[in-house]
Length: 375
View (cartoon, rainbow, N blue to C red):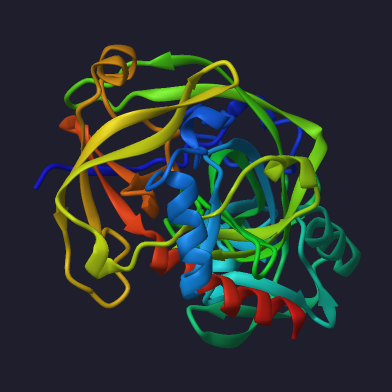
């Protein structure tokens, strides 16, 4: 099978805007115009389908397709690497020696909760090399470790020899808004740390206004990407969950859904092989509807979110981007007037094809994540 790649590259322009932001490829997606949404039509058109769905109790959501800036701060600090410290007694590795590993999440040092790099640094300097208790999470287990920071001979600071990260930032795409819960879903996959490939533990985060600047066209062996920027001072929603099926939150800017009508969510059994469309923005702030073909619907696979295979057939999109590019993660997939799912991966060796997640899989997360937030 061809190598595949997630679509959540992180925007380098934001390195100064968010603490210790992880940086990878630049990419983004953007605003959905009315053209790509549920449009009014005559009998049997979109308007008739929407009215009928409201009468049958089908789940209704508003497809968005809008690119936004995403910033998130971790719950605890994530250990992304280990290193040696040169002190008075020579080189040593206190973090490694005490049992810390890449991927561990440090939540407390002694009785102090730590969520930022600055908090960890402050605690270490205050202890001045005294022994400390470290509370960390590894997978679903909590651990208690004992360590002793070493005074670095180069700068005189006390260090553990652990590289840590507390935040990330980038550009992604809103997939839908759920009027029933007030929640939105985006990306169709989780936000993973670039070094550990683990889901970032979310403490807080938000989405912000974004624009697309230009496109790097995809080629076999070299995935393309959308380049964009976002306004760090204009929040439009709050994040409350980062899951394997996407990121979820609540909108604080009602204007995002003004004039937009909901459409039914397709069940897996309703998704057919053949023609469909995706809503994507590849220039400026205009999102358009592009033709694709659903070439495979995978059976339920116990948590694997690669549930669809789609192939771009629209000559306009192929000419502009080469097919599917990084930054299109979360782009809604529509078929027969219903939201089928969202684009999530690109096949690196064939940019005309990629994977998608079913909308019903994403929707299944919204009650759970909202309940977790309330509790």
